[in-house]
Image (cartoon, rainbow, N blue to C red; front, side, top):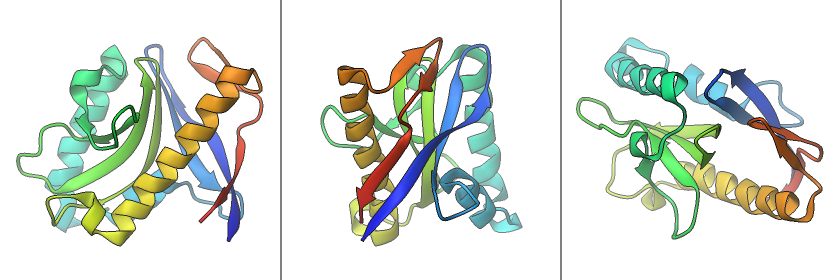
Length: 160
């Protein structure tokens, strides 16, 4: 099944621009789905840890040391938070560079690898697909990056 996915600015700061992805036939972004899904007392500590990590990124940018590597070799797929003490939540993201971070959806970690969780794997696969398509557009000039923002051709047709 083919679906359209939009890459949209989520929040802009001096040091970093956060993007999110949203299916064009849905009103809520994948990032907001994550926050809505885990907005309960049960996940309070995990959300507090995640918020603290995001605040660090806002201060200094999307520096690599704040992320957990999650993807395949040469992938920009990472997860927050880096420090897993006291929290089982993982928010997948594409760290394009220090100034651009694309936030996706996430999951509650219950296994050693996200590959063993079909929902988590689908979130990771979606981001990796978007990354491949975005990098191709950046290379051939269809999408332009200027001052930590992307311009032009930010709609992607993907097969699920």
